[in-house]
Length: 220
Image: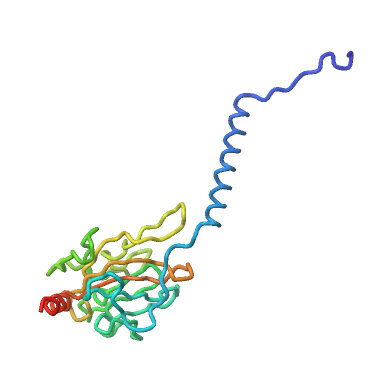
């Protein structure tokens, strides 16, 4: 008993207990988030289109869908609406209408190619079939100090979730003017490939003049 005389018992201070509790809770949250990230299914995606754009299931006959492989961080991949497919082209040519590289998108006009008539306008969150291409208001491509060339209307076609680290479409419709100045209405569907990897951009579109023709044929 004499050996215990004068011994002091240690009691943690309230502030210490609070900090320990916060750290423990943070550890549980981070651990749970990491486990959820590892086990969650990959975002829905599509395999790159091997041929031409096709009518997606359930869509009107004038709406086409295409998945372009834009996984390269260096090379731009070009798409031409008249053919409904990706094409090999030079950036300063008139042989393409949209260019993709990861989440970036360019039109064939402005500073990207002064000889092209390309441009784009954000029509807002509206169903593709209800969107109407305006006669004017198309923004040309311009240089950005940090991002390089971009089209201001298409730059924010997607949103990034900092929690899940995934890219998703904002579900806006866009009017895009081709290199020749013809209007096309576009919406973005997905940024992922069928194996879950990022960089496969799936988009739907229709050309107003062809849509009118398709509706007229259906009525007859």
